[in-house]
Image 1 (cartoon, helix red, strand yellow):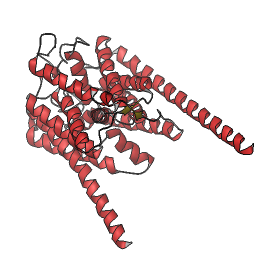
Image 2 (cartoon, one colour; image 1 turned 60 degrees about the vertical axis):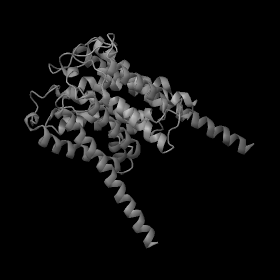
Image 3 (cartoon, one colour; image 1 turned 90 degrees about the vertical axis):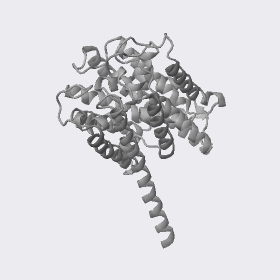
Image 4 (spheres, helix red, strand yellow; image 1 turned 30 degrees about the horizontal axis):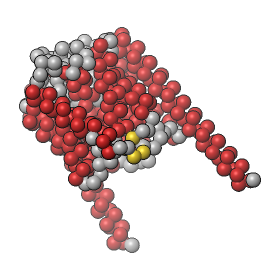
Length: 379
């Protein structure tokens, strides 16, 4: 009994250091990518990178944010390679795809009003950007709202086994994007100024993405999962990984990019100081992340493992990015647009309405099942 207790304790300690280690590598890589050319105060931003890819494919024409980001390609292929090697690649899906698409769409709207995904929120904090504190507060509030729906029975249903070919679609798209990036045909758009023009070398960005994809396929690190599990079941495993990202990104920025490190609210790169909308934008991201079962980074890793539900979410993110820039919803360093404010409010209301409807339907079905079973027993 004592031996088993010690073994359990050692396993828990090893798991803790593994998740911290994966966060540490992610934080250091983000700082290195900034040093070698990626946008300052960013390094890695999953939402922004999907937005850049949407622009490169001509889905929007915001000239300053168009580039096929190799990091996204690496995330998908890294997760795919490791999942195949470990026998964990499984084509599955079919769990409320339309709802997942809508949730992904509004997740991107919230992220582009804040100007960053949850990962970039942490990386912004690690570079001294205090505006991200409002985003963090909003993200936590959104997660707490999402948890209430989980407690009431919210579920998007079970994924089922899908044809093997469906699981290969996202990795195949990643390969096609890599080819387009290298060949750079005339019909692909590349920014010549602005954030989209600030890029680390392709091989370095791809290698960083592959490393992150490999690690996160094993550790399952997720920003939403970290806070959700801490509040819901008092499990701090993933939260240690988030702390690892912050601490080592902070160290990396101080070592590699000291001139770019600045503590404060004003004049932060690719950010705005509209506190209310930094907060509300990330409330929307937090709710959708909990309902979807993962933040944008986690969805990307899942898609690489063959999860077609996550792939549908990514399609929602990309369409949301295109919609945001085509209709003036995305923020800029100048602030939040009127359309962006309206979209966030609509998004919060719409997502809560969808979640409430799903809960009501689930509870009704449960009640009908209990009554039916009870009737059979009594008969």
